[in-house]
Amino acid sequence: MWIRFDKDMGDFVEAVGIFHYWAGTTVVMVGASLVMLNAFIACCGVYSGSKFQQRMGSVW
Image 1 (spheres, rainbow, N blue to C red):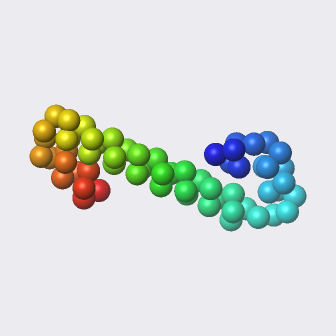
Image 2: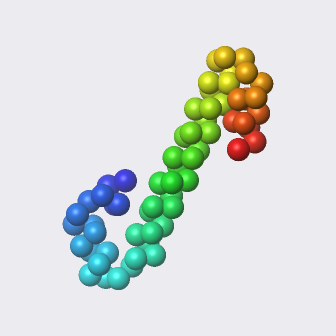
């Protein structure tokens, strides 16, 4: 995350022109957020015993 939010790294990306790398960090962070959300839903399903939440956690 420091690569994405560090001001010096942002200046470096602009100077070198590697914007695809910059966009790639955003894609990785969004993907990681979706995985964490999926894991949270699955854990809530196991805790509550809800078959629907368990299936959503394993399919999504």
